Length: 202
Image (tube, rainbow, N blue to C red; front, side):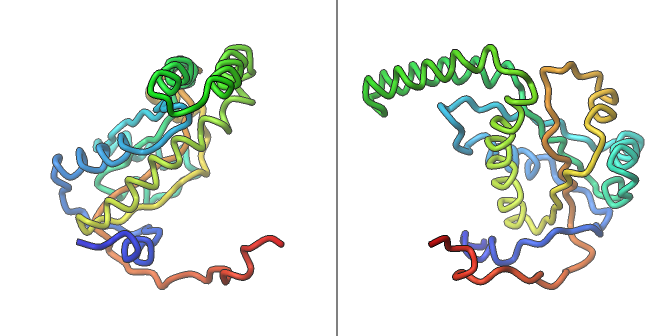
């Protein structure tokens, strides 16, 4: 099993997959890793749809500007945010933080005010805030997948409404990313990354 540093260094965006079956217990392990991710006020807004059916994967690929590798992956995880769940979870999470003494009384008041403000915010304002939480959970999946020899690829380029229409989801669900998963049929070289001194701000 890889340690965390090795997993981070080995991770690649995989766009070619073997057709091999992925055991259900491995998929459950990936989702359990996502479940354990941190989130603001422990709101846990992530929701996931597991897609294995060829026809549905093909429609997801079509919704993603015909990126055919999505349909080729044995499994696609549709990673979403539950907007109302985030609001409700934030409100209850603030109360829990106060009860366990994780934040001081003054901060509880600040967080409660922020939680109340969420209720009146427009969806376009809420989505970026919630998506950050879901992104953390997705990256847990991406790194844990390496323990099972699985590859993945973040896909953010898609028509969200087409994906929602496919599953008949209401506006309360925001689709953050499509995540094809499978055994890699390629091993891309590491792409250039900025040096450490280039990402530090004076």
